[in-house]
Image (cartoon, rainbow, N blue to C red):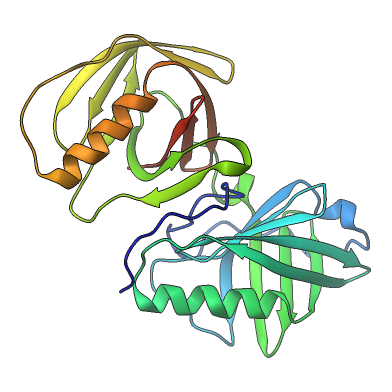
Length: 265
């Protein structure tokens, strides 16, 4: 296993480490879309792969941004690049990748996905379903809003997945040290926090995409260094107004100089 290090790719998407194939019935077949507008602004999750075995408990996520940039993940690192669709031919180029610490099989899967996407794929779009074919592999994907609906911000226990430092293009993201389990939960105007070291709470309010946290009261128990470092990052971020984005089972909280990426627990 490689050691976690900081990466300078801001998060085109957060690491995708979710369940496997969806049980949702895909949209009935129809004529494939012929232009990039059928993909622009959409995110897709893999539901089935033939010709290649994904690592257990992982799935592929692909984001087709309207500006021609692309984000992808396969259970470990986030990738960034560009995409274009000419008729039914998808051309993708991966130019950036985070360097989070993950098991070797997930690193290998990252490498495979980046090369497969860059190979030139046949794309068939039928409503909410996208089928990509190339190099002997057929991948069926489903629109994220159907496959992975947004979790509720309140009433969900959110587990810390990543820590961000900096802002804009200078953001560096690091993984949570092994053995540290930190969570937050919003309920009825209160924020409950478990930093992986101490527990505590604060008042909280949500106005659109802004979450405002009041003074955070925490216990003062001494902890191992990794847990103490994570607690420091959490308390530094959970101050004042934060930008909040819920994307499926992922929550991202960002402040002026730091941020937290969490997943629904």
